[in-house]
Length: 406
Image (cartoon, rainbow, N blue to C red):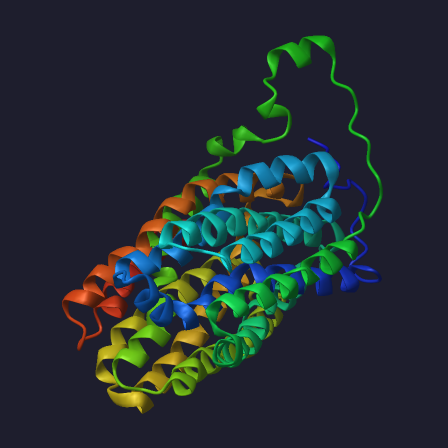
């Protein structure tokens, strides 16, 4: 199973690979941080279009779901053309989506532009960036993955206060226009992702060509016969129902409690700073001789801790409590994020990773899409309590049992 996005040569574990890690740092950072950073605008857009918490939550949910649903398409393109052109096209798509959204006249317009077009653009940034790391690193792969995944909190900690400044200066329409130009930096990141070697796939025999469908030549469906892959997939579906919801509603919930806008935005910055610290630390620990052979158990611990964090939130009242929650949430979220794809690559191998990511993301788009809106309905019913976190913890904790079976 050889494709343009994968090289059968021995990974160099360094050299230009560190430039590739930096490009992946930017691409992965925008893919995960951008939907979260847009929550700064939610309260104002909600009032502008006179919509509910649940309706406004669909903007981020559709964007995240489109990013995950675009995984198989991205996998096919990466396997055919390699990571570099796919990431560059994705950057153009996200920039164009934000440009069109700045002229939005209804919430449906935002669903289409920010959610659908922007989400697919992020899919073309995320999956190629994850795949190419496996072609450059083997021994140092957990560390490289941890450093690349650190892009999300670094960019989030920058975008959160920047978005508040842009909103105060230009309004949400002008801010979306500026954000579109910022997203074009993903094209620069993509230019760094040159392949290790240019591999031309061998032409299959006629009998093999007839027996295989067009899709099977680009996506490895035999992964569904892989026991570890199936356990990973089921566990992550449960996890993702509650994984993103607390982050999506953290700033809007703080604003509703009477906390000023900049202090609410600071919560996301605090969360991102802690997340930024723990991701490379997790990657370093995962690369040690003691942890790497048991990295699946390390991942199970991270998922369990993430669920416990949400249960503690109602016990931490006031702004100081929200700051404490942002800190412990950043630790749990960062550990899970740093190990999420490293565990998958460890299970299926680098040569099947592109297909595995595509299949995982298309199935995970359901819980990613439904999780925040369901929590938004709860948030409207009991605004003075913290139902978002408690429900999310219920979704996160059972996942540990599944991951332990890996």
